[in-house]
Amino acid sequence: MFVGHGLLAFALVAALARARGWSAERALSLGLLAGAFGLAPDVDILYAPVGVLGASGPLDAAAGFWMAGNEVHRAVTHSLVVAAVASLAAGAWATGTRRGRLGATFGVAGLVAVAFLVSGALGAVVLAAFGVAVFGLARVGRVRLRHTPLAIAAAAAVGTLTHPFGDLFTGEPPALAYPFDVTLLTERVVLSPDPTLHLLGALFVELGTAWLAALVLVWLRDDALPTWPAPGALAARIDRRAGLGLGYAGAAALVPAPTLDVSYHFVFPLLGIGLLVTAASAVREVRTAPDRWHGVERAALSGLAAVTLAAVAYTAGYLLLG
Image (cartoon, rainbow, N blue to C red; front, side, top):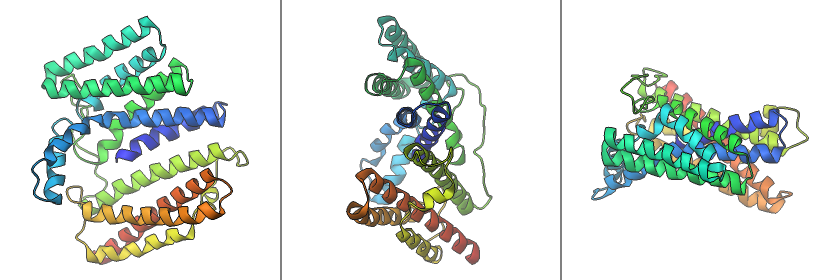
């Protein structure tokens, strides 16, 4: 679900900005900034590579990676309280004034101090890294993208406040009220009692988010489209090679059923199909597309379509075999 956090924030902010009369270019840039803020809470996974040290093989390395990462993952940076303070700090930092930056620094420093008292040195270091990421994005939003502090704070709020809810389908629920000792959610959202169907359901949630972001992107890029693009506007941009994804139905009979605990043997080939179709489409588009960005767009959409068709095909095969 890593990518989906950013895609959801991008789609929400970019679509809202465009609907409020912003130019397509300005709406796109603010949406991209919100998407980056949506990824920022996962800076806590930077500690996870420690678990790979001394691993005896790929599966052992993967298990060690997540075991180390889960010591702090979805804790200090996935809190709605922390997100609210960080969003205000982003807006204050973007003012560029001494008072604003001092206030932002005190706000983040206060969070780091509280994290040290509640979660120890590791929690404080992770939250400090999150603060640095927030300040860095705020600077990009103000200096490079020329957005107002209010717009930057809003983008940060959408990105960081929506992030924890995307994690409700996988793993343990995030600590939404951290640092307060209040448990808002005790269990993840279960899409199916069958662990494989639950994994597939979470995958389709991610893919749905990706398609929403794709619709928004097409809407922003094509002024000839109506106020909201119909699905046909995307279909016209997809290479027929995406149909290769349907061949993944056979994997339902060839590989063990994936679950949240063990899914690498399912996910890696699935992504491989998408990358293969994307690469093949990109080679073709380099020769025929009217411009480079048009070719990149078609290649990316074709890869996404291939992954979607592969997921649908595998699900159908799994249900038939079950």
